Image (cartoon, rainbow, N blue to C red; front, side, top):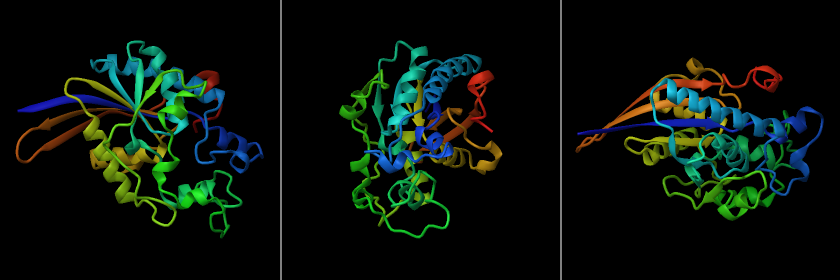
Length: 271
């Protein structure tokens, strides 16, 4: 016997910390949660357009609309989904899934916890510093958004419900960062654990996780798919054969689609 379904994974929209840095500022230096940037207004609009695009792609592939939605606990992902779900009014909530969160590797920690951090991945070039933010040494799960926090944000307009228990990053910190193998394992666990027979599940995550999930599910190098831009959309179909030797088969129907980012909204954001 076998079961099947579909999965859509969406990267979040344009980040405020990146645009601030590109204009000569440093959002990270004064933020109360320097590891959890919100979207820009452009990012919010990208999310809305992504929702329309997702509906069109699912219709094109004769797949049903999303029935359940899961978000990384980072604010930018919950904001992106809030905008995208305007296209799917029957979906009234999203659940947090720690397995979808940002890479908890040294490059991530150094992007926000050093004295000179400015959101640059790995820290400013040539800088050799140790973290000045003690939160870098805490359990990584303690840094992640909760339903209470996310629901208190004006830009999160869809109810956020308590986390599912598929993945965990509680074992990571600056002193014990996540390896690429560890990230890939949690992403596969999230994809398989959240899949539901006969349904389309919508996930929102980050650039690295979305890219590495493609590699893990298809066995192909990420360069085949190219860069995962803001609000890039990937669509997968899956089939699982039940039995003693459970076997998953994944088919990628769309990878890093950004067809919704045309005209003025593109604005040089996606190269």
